[in-house]
Amino acid sequence: MIAGQVHDRFKVFMGPLALDRTLGPLADEVAAFAAREGVAAKSIGVEFLEGLGQVVVSLGYSTSEAPYPIRLHTTLLGKIDVFGKDFTALEAAMGAAAAEKNNIICHELYLTGSGDIFLVVMTHEA
Image (tube, rainbow, N blue to C red; front, top):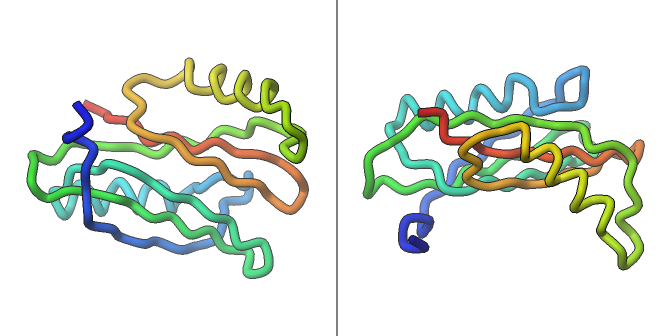
């Protein structure tokens, strides 16, 4: 039900990408916040700030329902043309990566300066 996704609270995290260019420890920090604060995670936003070498992750959440454990997973999709009008290859890569995870709540993409596209999914871990 759509009402279950409605939220109006946000927490922002910032840090460097891991050596493999995934969210690395920052993903753990987001999950730890949700567990520690007892919030129901609803959405994520991810923006890689190439000039700063930092990534910003925002977590959208609700405090009006029971909390549940979450985890953020980062998958390299590769170098895929995203500047044309045909996103078939990107959609297929996203679908293949998502098929490897269970209980996906939401997703986000980020692009590095080297042209690699990463998919981040937030999963319900119960």
